Amino acid sequence: MAREVLSGDYAQSYAAKLARVDVVAAYPITPQTSIVEKLADLVVTGALRAQYIKVESEHSALQACVSASALGARAYTATSSQGLLLMHELLHWASGMRTPVVMGVANRAVAAPWSIDVDHADSMSQRDTGWIQFYAESNQEVLDTVLAAFRLSEDEAVRLPSMVAMDAFYLTHTVEPVDVPEQADVDRFLPPRSKVGTLDPHRPTRLGSFTSPEHYTEFRHAVASASKAAAQLAPTVEEEYARIVGRDLGGPLPRYLTDDADAILVTMGTATTTARSTVDALRAEGRKVGLAKLRRFRPFPSEEVRALGRTGARIGVLDRSFTYGAAGAAATEVMAALYAASPRPLVRSFVAGLGGRDITPALVRSLYRHLLEEEGPEVVWADLKVPPGEATAEALHG
Image 1 (cartoon, helix red, strand yellow):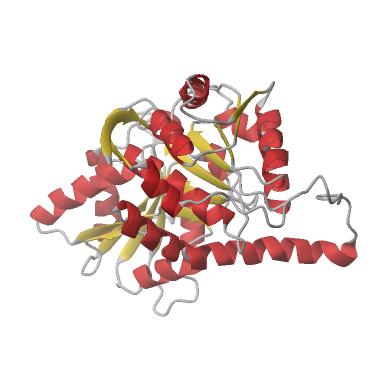
Image 2: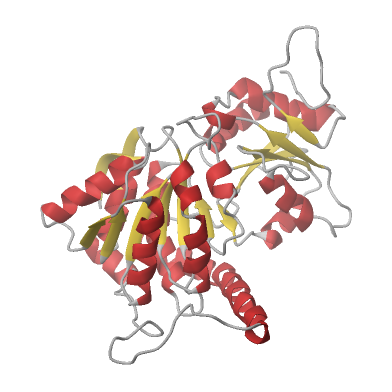
């Protein structure tokens, strides 16, 4: 095990190298660009033996990966924001064709207006494309999760693509110590990909071609079944990673001081770090609060959320995006998972941190105060700036 000081972008690159990817499709977009730049350097120097394909758009990047994966290659690409939106058509093709591509996503706000800062709307808007979705809190978690994602995606019972999302700039361009596993350990955990079920030039066949209503439902059900299989297999994959590499990835919903909590905040990505330190401060003041990190959004960990609901605590869900539905995307899923719970805990949806706005300890304190002490609307835009003299029931002020 070697300790390196890496950005989140380089953590993605080194993970792809350790995975011994066969194909990298590359197209630049801020703040993802240094991922594929580093991979280009690794290929040129011979540190990574892979086919590096420079394409004309993000759409083409994913098409190249889907095609390579269908032939049995281990394929990787990365993107962000508008680039991910341009891939939308191919996201459905990747899951429908059961190609286990792994993609790094640097979460960045989408236009209009233009922004290059963190927001989860890019990947959240792709949540129903059949991809497994992970959200990382640290650069260490980025590297570990990419490796685990390849193992999970490539399992014959799954064969679904995965995206490993990380917050723009908070992770992509911030450096921290990362323990990089030995190549031999990664090879034990992640052997070469099985070629079973892929295209073979010597046995011509068709993949992804036209089908009729007589069969279409079954294709969609197959993807749903594979997603369910991914949820069932994930604990085994993580247990093996911990045994070989020595790090516990924590499961889909790691919990912190939740057993006796009166209020629990569910977070994703780097907001978790701020929330955890705030929990410690509030605990020192005698407030019984806890935290749950939604690390895997797809397949959604409904059983783990139901277990969280049985603590009896009020639950707040912090979304770093808004999807113009009943509530924030993560909050809506939590509410759905708890719909049949008896008794059903109070759940509030908090929207904050859009477009890179800081999620501060003071803001997190206000969310816990709202959960513990106040009645209010189901959906709260927690850091909405309201002009002086005006008020809105949807805004929370700390």
